[in-house]
Image 1 (cartoon, helix red, strand yellow):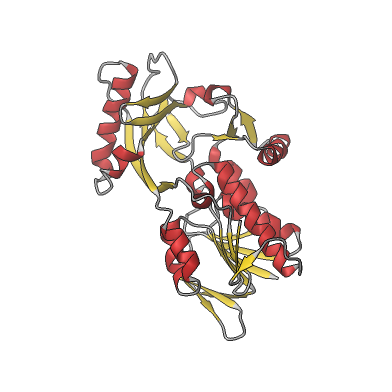
Image 2 (image 1 turned 30 degrees about the horizontal axis):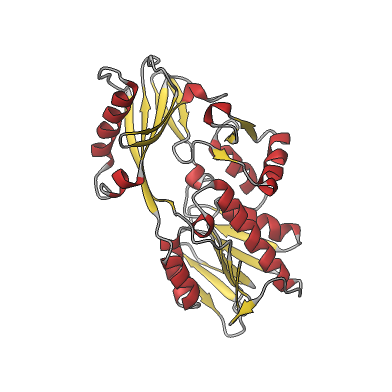
Length: 328
């Protein structure tokens, strides 16, 4: 079987891993310039040297036994390390968060910088993926592994129930501030949570193997971010810098570098389903928008969908079906 996957984040790559392990051929398409997605690392060139800031997920938690087993393999392979400063179950990608996604993506056929604008089903039941580059396929199955707002247009023309499900899981936005300072700030804590508009602030010094100089990530909470969706990054950066300095109780200090990045589709609360799979159409959807706003949720959803697809093409039905739609 040949499967096309739209997206190349953790959920997509986990699904691809399940499929390729079963012997299937998988091709992934992602609009990003390279690996990372919401586990990206921003590299900035400063007069103090290169600095890499994990401006997406600054870490991830491993709670469930299955995900902990996967993380143990990643640790054995040198991809992750525990991060006590982030909590008892917190882990970091090594040497940065994006490197974990990069290593997982290297196992698969991923086409980067490709904006997918549609999926089409042929008369014989095969699929094609349309992008700004070309028409790709044919595929025996197609999977969307993108935020719900981006999944709806792909699903709506083929499975209205899936599209309705995606519409019921709106994303929450997050403004991220990235700041580089000439010298270390005299902060009492290098990890802050829930301070005014700040949901989380992390100093790179709190993480192993991160580059110098002094740099901080600030994630604004969803309420603050959502009310400023249409603001420009150059307007947001000073606001988040002021919020950081207020949270640290420091006088105003000029940042050597200050920028902001908007994660419009940062997270979703989840709708209590692991994955969607229409066995008749061979069309599926996975992502943390189905399961919850954590990396572990993305991994769980991707694995669930991969196993659903494998059960269909392996001729074994493991889940109840209603009108061709399998729902965990």
